[in-house]
Image (cartoon, rainbow, N blue to C red; front, side, top):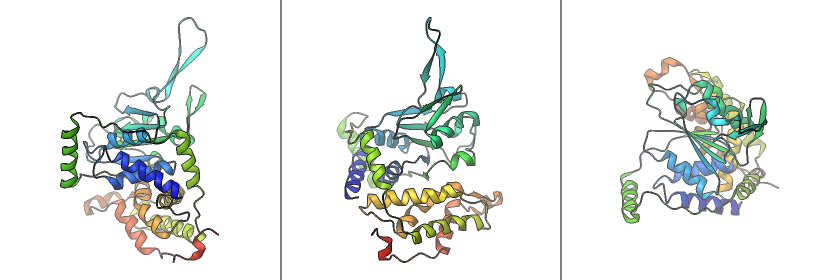
Length: 320
């Protein structure tokens, strides 16, 4: 686990050369990569969402493709299609941009539901079916989707089934004044737009690190703690639909990755608490009338965390 922690630290430090002052957001992306999951970044334009995704792919040595979602985007523009080429009688598969290690679905809520659904099979099954022909996607595979949380005109809200397939939802936020000044200073000194980042890994190394994360020990008491938190979201009076069992699995995967990034081979209750909001908030549907009270799903998760008894950290939580 010490090697995983050192590896994650190097990735975060290199990405931070391009995205200044957003160490926490970068750390969540790296954590999701190690947990082999997908990420939804919901934030305003101009906050380096695309840059962060591209930089993560570059330093990880992974192939990166970007899809700009628009109202006229077709499912075949994402997955690819078959066509006749020249005088050949056989159909040739033209693979779409989904065939990459890291796929950025930019402004994913601007495309209609039939195009958004083109991502569902890829995200869940790690495969694409085109006209009855199934193609496996290369591993590792990660979708990073973005959307603007305040602009609704001409958008199509993501259905709950698709939201549930994102391991976490996070935001970037505005940088503080000091970080923004440092960003501008760096841009002035390098005298060019792009930051040259060095690849520090390969697909094979990422897969090895993901396999290492899967060996992190989770005590039954901590698993029960995860399930209790998710169960609390289903019984809250403000909630129409609580977190699904995928929420419990998301807590497990992210808590393991978080523990590994700290160099530990076991999960503590604090690891679960640290990632509960990004792992669960987007899986909760609130009652429509609560928007007047400015209650958010993040507030519900915080209240659920406060109600669930935290198990004491005991030697049994460490692997024997």
